[in-house]
Image 1 (cartoon, rainbow, N blue to C red):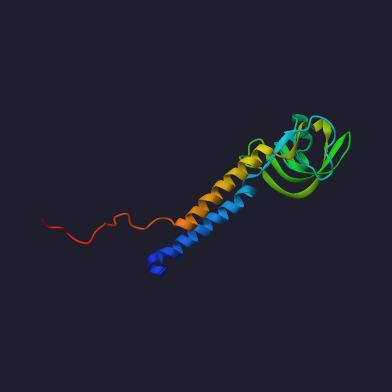
Image 2: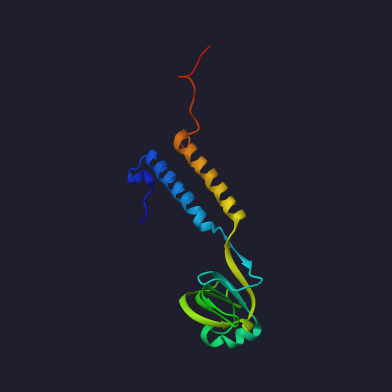
Length: 169
């Protein structure tokens, strides 16, 4: 059962304070939520242990890994436990499927993926452009929150009159 702010006895200044705190909390969480990382193709070499990678499976890989992953797996994401010239060993965090709208979350199970089952390898790296955009949005939001904190949300009602009463001539 919900009650209005007036029936709860909250003053408008308390409501504004709560709104301001919610806005500031959202702004502080924004950089982490926006994800300043992007997946970039790994053209050559072997990713270092611990590097976060996304492996796109070939048709052959999809069929070969249907046992541990289930049918229709197309992309596997997770940190590299180890890698060699012939295989990756991943601690799987998520698996995307052909017919699924969202990836399935995993809890770090280790999976050996032969390199010839992989059609593309991408490594998660810090994106400078996304980072600068997030910093800019954060700074702008912080400036807005500061302005609201100093000046407030407004005077409340917009129908204030100047002067005292009626005038007769």
